[in-house]
Length: 249
Ligand code: CTP
Ligand code: MG
Image 1 (cartoon, rainbow, N blue to C red):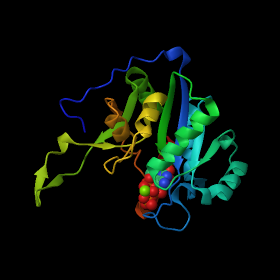
Image 2: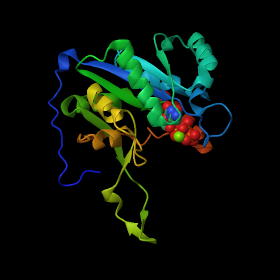
Image 3: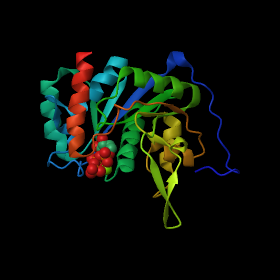
C-alpha cells in the first residue's frame, strides 16, 4: 500500500518493564460460511466452546493480560452459560460487536479508551476467536516483535501454487512473493487507534492494512500452519483433530 513518497513513521522500542497488554478477542461475527445456525465461535470443539481456547492461550501467556471479548449481541446468553461452566473465563470483559470486523475492532478500541483511559505503553492484540489453535509461543513471538517495532503481524508461507488475474488473463504467480496473514495482530494502542480514526476504505482487509495506511511499517513474525481460521464446515473437523493432537503432546 506504500508508495515511494510515503513517509514511514518512526516507532521507538517499548520500555519492556511497564508494558500492559490488552486482548481484543473478536467474536462479533455470524459465521455464515460455517453454517449451522449458531455463530461458529460459540460452537464446541471436542466439548469446549471455540472461543474458550483463545482465552486459555492468552491467560497462559500472562494471567494479567486484560481480555475483552467483542461479541455478537445474539451470543450474550450463550456467553453467560459458558462463563458458568468454564471458570477460566472469569474476568473476561465484554463489549458489543459491529456490523463488520473493522466496526467490531473500532468498538473494542472505544471500550478500552473509555474503560481504561488508554494509557501509554499499552499493546493490543487483535485476535480472531475463530483461530482457537493460537498458542503461547506464537503470542510471545508477536509481543516481542510488537515491543520492538510497534506493530506485529503473523504470517505463514503459501503452500499452494498460485495464479493471478492480470488484465483479464490468469497467469502463474510466484508464491515466494506472498505470505498468508493470521492473527493475533499486535499494535501499540495509539497506533491502532490512529489507524482506526481514519475513514475506512474498501481495501482495508485487516488491522495491518488500517495501520499501514496511517503510515506505519508492519513488522511480520512467524505464524504457524495450525493457527488457521475456522471458516467452513470441514475446518471444524480439522480443528478438532489439531486440538486433540496438541492436548496429547
Ligand atoms: N468478526 C467480528 N465482527 C464482525 C465480523 C467478524 O468480530 N462483524 C470476527 C469473527 O467473529 C471471527 C473473526 O472476526 O472471529 C474473523 O471473521 P470471519 O472468519 O469472517 O468470521 P465471520 O464473519 O463470523 O464468518 P463469515 O464471514 O463466514 O460470516
Ligand atoms: Mg466474515
